[in-house]
Image (cartoon, rainbow, N blue to C red; front, top):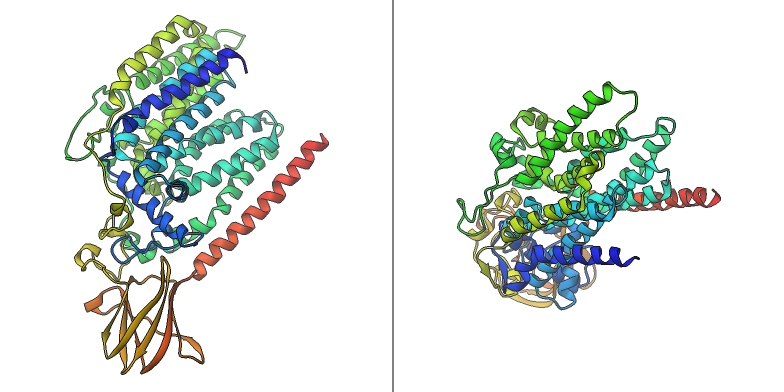
Length: 558
């Protein structure tokens, strides 16, 4: 690697760290909308892994009496954070490290993609735009949106996959598209939709017409196998959501969740709006980014007019037009004019149209690259250096957190509230905060006898129970499909019926035992739906291995 390349790599790493440095310079973490939720999830996963459970399926200390948090939790962020916690880092430190790592790695990958088209200076300038993209600041310091931050790593991986298809590097393309899709599905499933729309435009615009069948087959099969391989998470996520209050809520998107035209260009940054904790949640595109889009739009119109009057095509015009189309389409999908599209059963899963800003942090810097390639005067090094300085000057002061707090680990190890809101409670339970705080795992609530706790783990426990009369037991755990109670009376082991609809113990597991001495085992086991998801994942991964092996052999023979 040349010294100039090393310097640029160092600068990207340095600027990436600068953009998150406020997290390291101050103790604790800033109050954000979702940061504490992701930190708690990471800690809950760490507790389960410490008990030897893998994959993690239950969180016993979440929402007072436990919930299947791993059923809907973002898998990759939760596992990565959990491993860091088990390695010895505090929950807050693990959270901050993941943000920093994701920001820096995604920036390096952005630069790597831009270098496929442009020189080092232009690619570096575009990367600086992406590092200090306003939505990044919002995700880090206001929303605490760790899954979206991590998902940005896989944007350039998918685009590099398509670029390799266009270059007929099919093996490399398949690997990038498979793993890119797989990890996005486990990081933030909604982002698959957000990324797929502009990715499809990019693919079809530069697809080789002679080999389009093969190229489309590589794209679709690689991404399909990546999605299928994540089925252990995706199938239960969609099929078992019916058990939660969220499953019965109308998923329509209201107009107030779209951006106004003003939010596309408004340079304002807010310290506070209506919420006393996080910084102002003012979602915007950015002034620099809006100007780049407008200039590109005007440039395409002018150049197309000139191009129609000449026999020679203007170099780079097609690439500029395609990148402009990807940007404009993503922007339009954030505006109220596109609200009718969100009535579609798949698109409405995005929840917030402004999530397309997550892909625009890559697309608009890419658009700037294509604009400069089409208009060579924009590649002037002094001009690019001036742009870098302006971006750093105006954006660094806005990358900071508000109301930093330091919380003890115990705050993440047990929560009486369901931090995801009561909509993510099973329909047969009440608000977990309205129940007494859990201080014991089990109790004899009717009859006479003794209870001895032999072993307790995150998703299982073993009791020794001596019932002098008929007794009624309670396990202070919210019931969810998958919980089973097995009783061993000394000669046989058999399941007992779980009751969970008693209004006095709403949603909690109770069961009855006749007089006698028992070893009772309570287990959270895989349902048919979760077993199906796991089987489909194994089939998907096995098929992907055979598929990649086949492409490798073809590539080797060539």
